[in-house]
Image 1 (cartoon, helix red, strand yellow):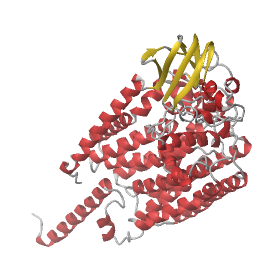
Image 2: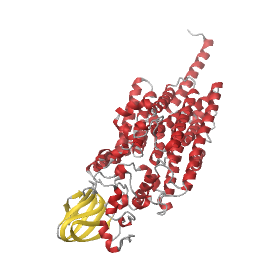
Image 3: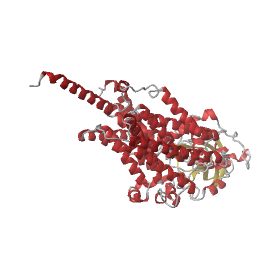
Image 4: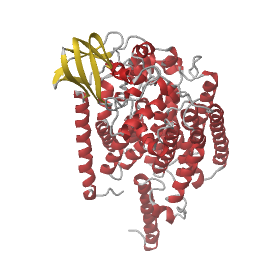
Length: 628
């Protein structure tokens, strides 16, 4: 029997243990900083970090960091300026003309068209397309793309802050989010050196996917919804990043899942959410993955500069020159060092979930660095899809995420348990982050000096990337353009009524129809009735039966009707232009870009996945909360 005088002490111990368990539970289900009441009891002022002021700080950082790009306009000297400018210009134009998902870009390749967006992810160009009415037609996308990049930079900080608040204190989470925004590969390399617009947008969704996995523990349905939509947005933004990142949420779910049975449950839920996300993105993914045989996709790796074995971090051959190679080396090394310092700040913790987060960050930090080094070549060789990533150093996107996670939890540990080692490491982090800012400033200066003008020659022929050229085009594109006399001005390709087409520099109004369609065999007259991105209507007066060649590249989605009856459409030898056989007499020829069976299937899967999401969302109110 316990003596009476000991009983109060025993009850006190029991209450202390219960309080400790509640705190651990709050950390497990809400994360550090996730339970405002707990934080307030500990005397932490959340005023600056809970809402408006933190968002304002992130917005100011995005404006400041993106100002050189916005002021000069997106364009030279970034590596990918040409194609992203052309894609935005055409995508946004057709979008605002009513084509809600412009897969076929009508004015690309001198007006012969391009199937680029059957394959290239559309989400980033919706992000820039919303700005088109503000900047107008004359801008050709320079300012709209820059505004889209600034929006992506702000959203990346916002999503990182939303995730890191679940794993660290509010101040540490805000610090980690700010670091994520200015991480040198993110800001300097992707924006100011490479102009990798789609990859830059991918940074927005990575933390949101991780937040979805984190939310699964407290609300399975909310977590599944968030995970599915964020993973779908990532897949429809940048496929190489999706491929390099997809193992990370699985590892995170496993390591933070708790006991073995709970780990399998967490892993299964994460897999389900990611599959659901692929279903939501099926409208893009299914055609992009299955129609690659119709374009010259092998061009992605045709040049030695574009092959993975020549683009490891320490490789001798590197696209972009020695300057970019040196900058990239220091960017990646500095990012890895910040993550390593964040890890070394951590002391021992009894919180199993927090341990899982930390070890996930460490594994990702070292694994992504390994993928960028020549010793990882067998991995790239034996995983077939990895070859299309082209550049192993693209794994720095995931490296940046892991480094900022470890930085946030390290700063949280230093704030709660400051020690001599932690102070030294904080000093090292300050030095390293200063180095980050120096690398960013160098990139901004490089861009500012180089972006003095804009190459309007891009907007004349509008030649697309070679990998999106239809396989039926055998001759060089320039020769094909010369053959249809549109190498100077593709304005004829706009949709106007017959007789209202603009004059070409070398052709009068009577020649407009001849430029749009010509008889390679036979003889006749062509009158243009409609010339739209998805439809062409021609009135024909055929004197001698023959072959009519239409000045648009052949693609299987195009279907022909002659006098409302199906007609056979074929690619012209060598040039890949559309051809149709027409008999003697008067006819109306209509060409329509129709949905391919796989497109229809993709739409069906996306709509079913979306309906499932609506049902889950409407039933959220009936879901019981999971309490620790």
